[in-house]
Amino acid sequence: MANTVKNVFRVINFIIFIGILIGAYFIYQNIQKEGGKTSELNRLQNLYSAGQFQDFLNEYEKLSAKYPEIKGQHNEQLSKCYAGLAQAKYEKALSLPANERSSPMSEVSSLLEKAESLSKLDIEALQIYCDALLDSGNFDKASQVIRDAESRTDIDAKILSIYKMRIEKRK
Image (tube, rainbow, N blue to C red):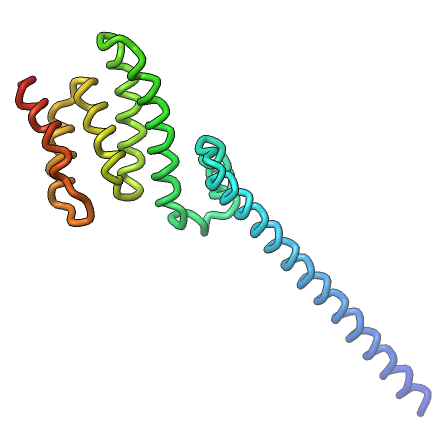
């Protein structure tokens, strides 16, 4: 009888030991998964810090599909990436003759529209946005951007008055 009780306790202890091992394995897997996510998010931040805006956008798209909970957490950085890409395209477009700028400036406008939908644009981006809208012939949208900027208290929208004058001249 004593041997039977000992054997039952051994079996119960063995089952408990196996359960602990299985639990530890699953905890380890979760820790590894979270560590992978953290390193991927750190890589994303490194791309942003290095000014690799297109790479940041591509990586963010992959990570947001893999980790849907990160959506909405990087809107300001996404906005700045789109604005950075727009600025680079804008600078290239300025080197073109005036009659060839319309299409590149439309691309610049599209990028800045995406940026604006994610976060407020700073004054420099607003100036580029207005310039691109005017060069692409989108006067109504440029007027709207200026009106929206004038209602903001975080920037000096008086700087955009030159664009108002350009709109009035073209109308």
